[in-house]
Image 1 (tube, one colour):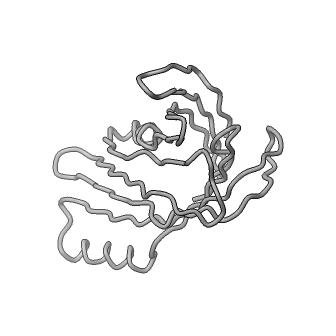
Image 2: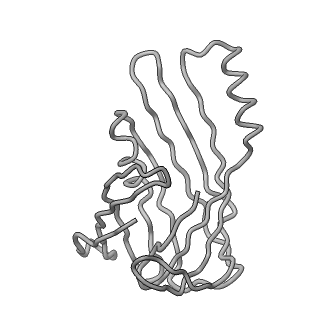
Length: 173
């Protein structure tokens, strides 16, 4: 992932930075999008709404999401606030809704992370991601199968390596 700050402005009590991001998946698929950070002097807020909106644009989806906050002063063992999202995609009778919440956000440790752009002192922040998917137009049998598959999958985990100098350095889902 390569991020470049496209603009910085002040709005009220916040400094807002817009970043242009290009990324490549493990399977080699490339995408570009823009997202925002904002800072109030005590916390940095990552606008996950802009990230998810960029990911769903091709499918005509809508996104509502909270911001994911990172205190400027992180400490090992610190618990961070939950964050949530809701994505709706589809048309007509075929609507898919995915709701999720990041819980148990915890600062695990401080470690050095190596990237193509350099070496960074980061805090490793872990979280559980609980999601629920609902699809309209599914018969009860299909809905039951979907619910069973989600139970077997269980909750996902995510890790974010956060640096005060460059913000999110690395992310694993």
